[in-house]
Amino acid sequence: MPVAINRLTVFLLAGFGITVFLTHTVVQQTTGQSTIQHISKLSKFLPSTTVNRWADLYVAEDDFPETTYMSGVAGFNYFHNLYSANGTFVIMTSDPESLPSYGISGILSALSDPEDKYHNHQPAGEDRIMIVSPQEAKERSLLGKAAIRKSGVSLMFADVKEGTLSSFLNHYYHFIGEMFLGLWRVVTAAGEIELPSRLIYRAESADWRDRAGITTWFQQAVLPEAEIEEATVYEDRKKSGVTFLFDKIAIADRWSAHRVGQEVKYWNKANADLPLLDVPLTWMDPLRDQIKRLALAEGCDFKRKNAKVPIVTYINRQLTHRRLVDEDNKELIAEMEKLEDEGVIEFNNAFMEKLPRVDQFCLVMKTDVMFGVHGNGLSHQLWMKPKSAVMEIMPVDGFARDYAILGEMMNHEYYAVHYNETFPPEKWRKENGYGVDQGPDFHSPRITVDGKWMAGMVRQLVSTRINAVEPPLPW
Image (cartoon, rainbow, N blue to C red; front, side, top):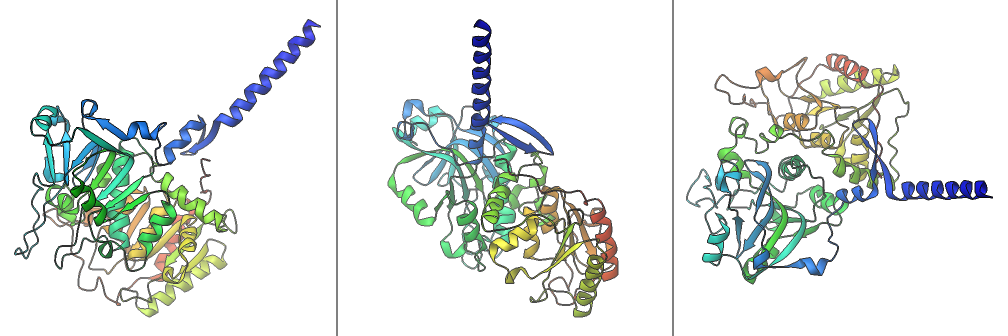
C-alpha cells in the first residue's frame, strides 16, 4: 500500500509540474538558440500596464522621482521620469553630470528665425525644456503639487513645419527610417523592447501623414494599441496647467541631430549617429513580429517554394522618374529570370506601389536578397531578416548614404552599386571627411547597370543564404 501511495504521489507531482511548465513558460528563439522563459516575460512585447492603474495615476509632490537619462545620441534621447508642465519639459535631477555632454543642444531645438533663409535652429530655451535640481524645481514652483502619470513608452516627434520648411515627417523613409527608427533604437539600446503606448506629434496632421498612407497604416496596423496624440493634444496638455510625469519617453528632434551630431554633419543625415549605439541583433524583432502576425493572419506564406532556393526581390522603379534606362532594366530582369530558370533563385520583380500593404511586407520579410535603384522602396529592408543582403543601384558619379545607414543598423550585407562594380565605404567620403556628392544624374531616368554583372553578384550573395530560415515567432 505505501508503495502504491508513493507512486501515486510521484505521478501527481510530476503532472502538476508539467502543467505549471506548459502554462507558465514559453520557448523563445534568439539568435538561433532556443531558450525557455517565464510567461511573464511576454509582457515586454506589449504596452506596459500597471497592477492598479488608478492607484498609480496620480503622484504626490513628495513622491516625485528624479529624471534618469537612459540612452541616446544627438537628436534621439530616452528618459525615465521626465516631467512636462505648461508646455515645458523638466529634467529634474540632482546629478546633471549623468546627462549627455551635448546638453539641451542635442535634445531639443527652438523654432528657426523666419527671417533666416538658412533655417538655422538654436537650442531650445526654457520655454521648451530645462534642467533643474529637485530643490530648484520646488523653489521656482516649476511643477504642481501632484503629477498625472503617463505610463508606458512614449515616442515624441518634436519637428514641425516652419513656413515652407517641412518637418520631413510626411515621407516614409524620413519618418520610419529616420525618426521612428531612431527612437526605437535608443529604447532598445537601454535594454528595453516594450512597444510604445503612444506617439506624440508637435506637427499638424497634414505635415506628418505621408501621401502614400504608409505611416498611418503602420501606426494603425503594427501599433494598434498605441495612442496617437496630435498637435491639438499637445496644446491642450500645455494649456491645462497640469503637471505630467512620463514614465518613459524618447524624443526625436531632427535639428538637434544636425546641430551637434558626430557623423550627421558629414552626411547630412539625421540618423547617421544611430549605428554608434549598441543594440542586440534582435532589436527589431518586436516590431517585425507584429507585422509578421498581421501578415500571417491575412494568409501570407513565409516559406520558399523550394526550401533550398533563396528569394530575390527587385524593387522596380520604372514607373517613377528616378529609374534605370529601359535597356538596362530589361537586361537586368532577363538575367534574373535566367537564374530562376537555373534553379538558383526564386525571383520577384516587384512594383511596390501596385501591391497591397500587407503583401509588400509579406514579400520583403521572406526576401533574402533585395536590390533596386535608390528610393523609398529600399526602406523595406527594415523588415528583412537580419544579415540579409541589399544592393542599391546609383549613378556612377553619385552616392547618398540613406539606405546604407539602414543596412548597417540592420546588420545586412549592403553594397552600393555603380554600373558593374561596388562602390566601397572607403570611397564614400571626400578628403575633408564629408560625404561625396550625389552627382547630376542621381534623380534622373538615366541610371545604368550591367545586368550580367548583377547576376554574378546575386549568385554570390544567395550562395551563403541557402540555409537561411525565417525565425519563428516567440509566442
